[in-house]
Length: 310
Length: 184
Image (tube, rainbow over all chains, first blue to last red; front, top):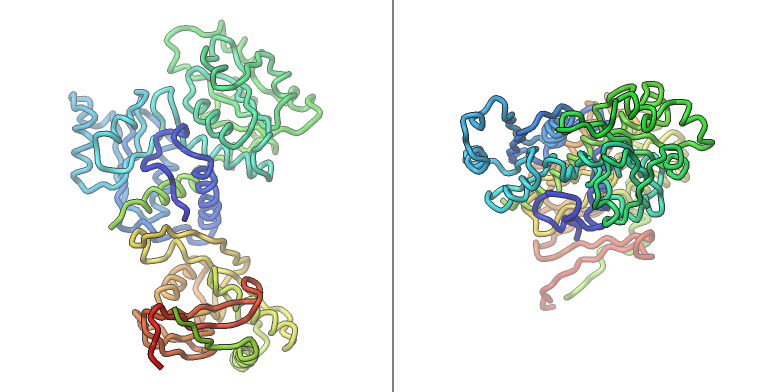
């Protein structure tokens, strides 16, 4: 009997290896569905999903919305900027008001770490964390792993993955580390020391500050965006210096003597983390990640909805 | 639990040949006809029929697809056990084609209803027929009947028709299983 061991998707930390395998297996079926002439299935026609985005988002919000619509769910969208949150309404009040409209699943992005966990303890709906501050972004990690497995044509046991860039401010990095380790992959992080969290070694992750060495070691480079908007102080002297030390360009990739997979969760600061010729090269699977994002989110929503009994 | 045999290996072989001949009568060389086996259990029957049509009856360009209907079922969230999807393999268009849906047992008709919805995702066929090995005629929930049937069976709801294939059970046989023993 295959079902998720969790009631909500709050973070990869709470999932088991079997959960990951079930999600990947289901996502593969949905990937086939979304490549059909008619990309929609009727499974969730009696389910209502609220997308609550208290923080700005483009691709995650669109990806979730598309996934929900392709499962035939009813969808309502909420952005904090145009809501009563601005008038001082609390998170629970906002969500309870929305739940009164008979919402079954809440997809939430919030700037506060643990917002999803807090909500799951107070409201009666399935919660999917679409990013909580600098904590976790589980669906991004799931789609990243799914895309890596597809690109490497194997599971990730023993594979070497380096996460390059602004690890400190990234929720993608932490979720990815949990997901990759659960699958038996080896993980390193690479970036300026100021952008590597002090606790990272306690997670069993090695730190490499030399980009060339990191790339020579890895099978996959998952490159992160420099999150200027989350930096209240300067973590490196200049963007130009960051690019010189940690930016990936065609010359570096060509000199490796082997093919590695290049990933990026988007949006890319072109010319900073990645040059355009690398981002658009055949080693890059950035657009595959976007396509897989819909399939993986369909899988997560479908599997959680399965637990909502009539 | 009591168990009685409905069809032996020999009987199944004869029935498969008859079904193959009936299909040829209506679809000639299958140039405008495709076979779609319903996952998971209908695929064994579909594969077997396709093999017969190709090898014994010389049908050269037979197109066979396998359709998973999990995401189209109407009992999602109503079942105790979660549904498990299997793969769909249809690498051709069914637009303007004659489609023959193949399943092992026709019971309530709900799987076939789901299959009809799922097939819409692959185009608009000219017509759709249904072929089943066992037709449990008194258990239908929906107005769905087969065009081709191997054997019609009258069974009560507590009884179960179990299909064994060489591929899965090392024998071709169909049994009627009952939890309640009937008096002779």
